[in-house]
Image 1 (spheres, rainbow, N blue to C red):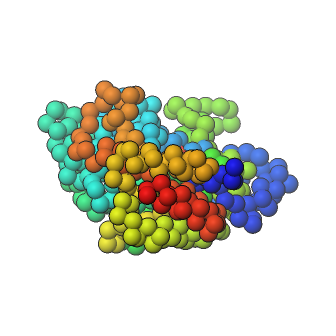
Image 2 (spheres, rainbow, N blue to C red; image 1 turned 90 degrees about the horizontal axis):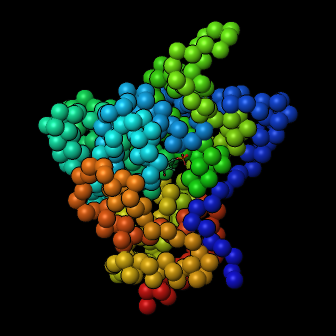
Image 3 (cartoon, rainbow, N blue to C red; image 1 turned 30 degrees about the horizontal axis):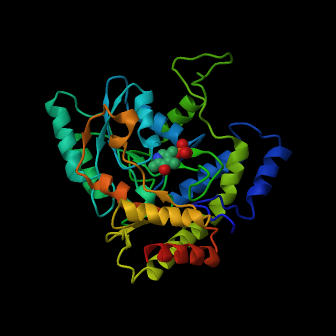
Length: 373
Ligand SMILES: *Cc1c(COP(=O)(O)O)cnc(C)c1O
């Protein structure tokens, strides 16, 4: 059996280990310390726009805190992109609120602004204005920020931007992760850079950052004893893991280029293959191409390709199964148009790591083409 080609595996640079060692040598083995401060500053510098960054234990924790900071609570409804990973929606339920799922548009695969507006209108009509909107830059492709922001402003509903997959993507020159009222990032093992597990909350408002850190560190009031006037969480990022993140930030631009390079290789090699189509970026939108995704004519072909790759020890994965089709959310209201359901049936994520070799891509392409003959 040939060596496994992974969908998206961690890719360390030259400096990560030295920052981790530094944490050990200085005994900063805690959810605070110099690595965490420097990692947060590096993310802020990279994103630009004067944002503040709070390093957290996961992207999911960041979504949970973000929703709470936007005022979401028991009995509220939150509009969430249906075509996403479950972690975009689960924290809505943690807070006792109800997700209402909104389907995608076909040119970005992200939240359809028209359906979003219909969902808001329906909510208002039923006497319950949605409390927040959670759009997602899926696979790194930016959502239609201008349209969604305009709707959000018109109805005065805050946006929690799920940028877990989109570090390095830009919307009309602005970094994804700086577009929402609050944004979140993920540094899980499969993301474009990783701290093995980790996430961040991003905001322009220093008070929101301060409140996020307060809640993430057990909501300890300012007193010599342990005093609490709010319910807190244990969500802060460890200074050891932030050391990995600090090293990863130094190679982030290279990692983005490598992933975009993978996309280009696949795209050019499959130019003449009429059965394979790609998601192209609309004007002004730049995807980090976290994962290269393809659409095949139908479910049977998609499965034939996936299994042929698997036979050759090459990992690929169907696109996200929409939340409104997930058993756990079967009772949740949804504004569906069939787009994400079709994408789920026909779509496949190809090996996309920044550490793939030309040989890996060649082996993947050869197997893929053979399976389509
Ligand atoms: C990975 C991911 C998350 C969750 O991040 P974790 O760090 O794994 O908790 C949330 N939303 C999307 C779209 C993701 O891909």
